[in-house]
Image (tube, rainbow, N blue to C red; front, top):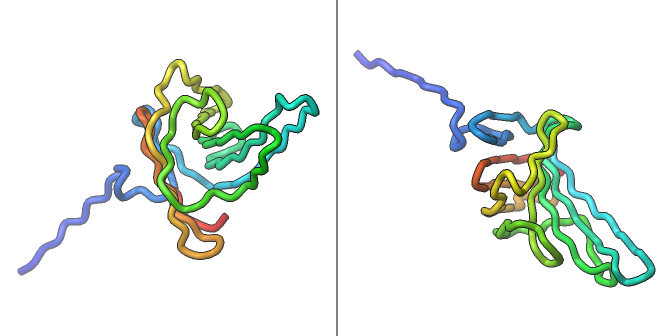
Length: 142
């Protein structure tokens, strides 16, 4: 006689489309890539691209990358492994978190770690990120 036991957990390894922050899980509903061009006319502006994982309008995780305003940037994030650091200038990848409308500042949490992007088709991606206080996974079309 054979018996089977099935156990379902809410651990990172088997949870799809969510992030865990301070031991609490948040379901990711969709992801979005965007770009902003901040031309100041004085040479002091910056261009930025963002990768945002939304649970709601007031709960999300955002990765960003900034370059000087005279450099081009688009919204696309290529496949690869990105080193996330405290975003204190150009050419660094940073992370910003907002939960229930409240910003989780970088001074309170150490947003260092990595973001891994894999592209399965032209619009279907897999994202995994691991930071000091957070882990997350999202896969789907963008």
